Image (tube, rainbow over all chains, first blue to last red; front, side):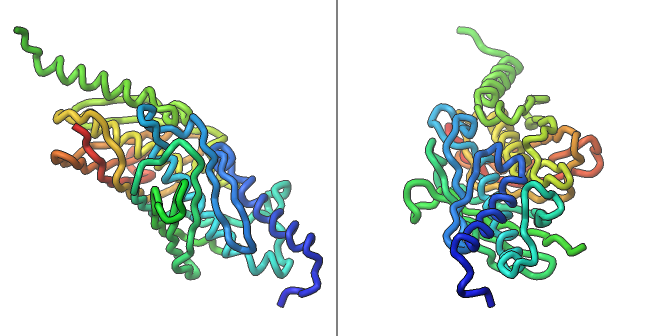
Length: 167
Length: 147
């Protein structure tokens, strides 16, 4: 059980540091410009619009590959975050971007299927992933992506992942 | 009245499809290169780059980059198909990641449109690094066909 009287600032900095280390250590996440909003343990991936994300300049629309990549990043970060949460809260691990060995090992994508529901508009996109099932070796994750309206998804995806094995 | 020879038509179609891909900002940003475009399909490659790495421990390119490459290559295959689509968009795309791509090596995708109806194209693709015998990833997708 976590210490009920632990200072709020210590709790927040522990969680934010771990999340920043996890996200900041992946070059491709930085290249796409993805960040994560955190509310307690709930994460929302945010993809700010940029010209380089366009796949169809006539409409214009976000590239289907960008949508897939964004949802896959959201899935991998959510899965890793869920996996490290308990160890992080108990103080057993403290991921630090400056210490590569302290970073959690990432799950490997086995397959990823994206369902394109409407074209991605030239504006910010959001995604939230849900770990449907996570065993010792395999995990199944579902991701929803939206832009202006939370209920109007522009894409959803399901992926299977191979969990990192200890040691 | 003049009649264009079929070879000119397919040459024209290839030029249109090539231009269509080359004006895609995201394809340019990732550094995609057109290797081949014919009635049978498309081949696009992507050199390895540090800022596209998904696993800093190993230096392996992120799966999302492969998705973007596969998606672009499949779309190009739809555009190059002899039935002549004006435009296309992804309906659904599934990627199987068979093994990590070797860091430092370019990834080459090959896509072919194996069936097309009035409004839907069914496409398959594989991605390879320098080892042609063992694909890095494979993809299957359904794409819209705008006529």
